[in-house]
Length: 344
Image (cartoon, rainbow, N blue to C red; front, side):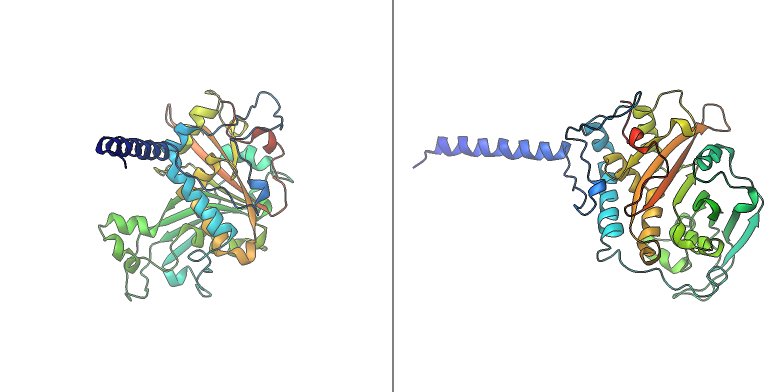
């Protein structure tokens, strides 16, 4: 029979063990591994590898705990949307896109206009790397979408325009979409002070960037299933921007700008998962989830780079996702030498 003193000591010891476990899992969050069916995306940076990396690029084989402490929630979100959405399409992710009818833009109050804007110069090198060559001006279309007309939805017959805008280049020649400006209907309605639970009542059915971009792509691409690249020019959202800045500071050379100084990550890395969990990545996720029947299963690579902005000491952040058909290889042949995180 244990004495009172012994029981108190045992209780104290158990309390210390519990506190130690809580502290461990606070600093070392549980991150689910990618499914075994994605063998090419299952590389674990915590294990040794004999894979060689040409100089000056060196991949390190440990998880960055500081990175996980700062961005672990985005890593988990990226895993959820990739595993449960893109790969398995489990409940909550498997719904196909709504049928927006023969006139999806007009019926939802969107005005579509085209302009003869040239591709931003900082993307020239990117598209020059995509075979067979950089597209000519007559091989792409710059589309401006403005939600500037009244519309009806399931709640109201005469909703005022939200003022949303989605601008971008649609480039079937390169199987690419380049988004240059996005302010969603939800963003604008939220700014009007509408409670979050009521926002759906005041936005058109066609409202998300993934659905709007897909409808625009279908209208401009003879073969929509060939979509291979989704790029974002000038990432400014307050989720992706701090993450990209962190990676540039940690992994890139201070003076490296442009496409040559890019960082590339796969969904096998915590960094790739975190980028997938940002609004810029989730647009790609929903594009694949909603249109799985057309686009099929894709593997993903993301490259980020920066360019000097228009104002002094300002940098422009750019992101491009490669949607690789299952079993295919990356278009950019230096992926294996640049698999991130690099240059630590």
